[in-house]
Length: 171
Image (cartoon, rainbow, N blue to C red; front, side, top):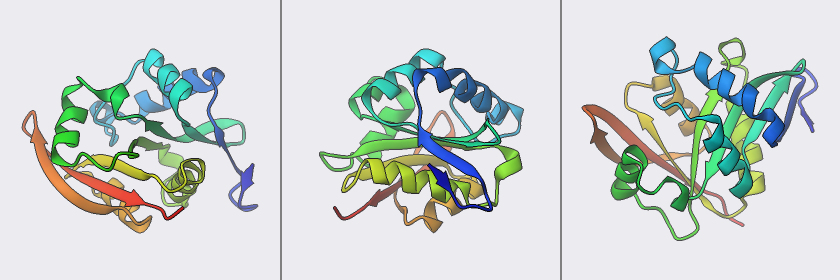
């Protein structure tokens, strides 16, 4: 599906064939390289996520320029950072992890994050999406707030402060 004629984004649900591009975009946007992503996942993690829940992706001119992961709470149990988030805000019984969200530097400020959130929520109607964001990641906090996420809790892990944000659509 193409979203917005001017933007020419192709928004879709990822398949296993998209995972190499997702991993590459993730690497380009990790905090160690000046980006906003604080965690890096191996390809196998993305493949497991795709098998359980939708990962929405955006392509522009055939190039992957954004993605938004959905995952079950069960799939992240036993991982320190997600466990800390779930302790701070467990969410409702039907909640899911929303994120990470990654938008290529060339596409920031063009409304792509909102398009990815819209596509994720269209695939998960009526369910609560819960995410965590580093407190110092102002761009991500602002993007989540613009799309109706509310800061509901805070926690620290490994000397870093995070906020938990939540959004629930009505079915």
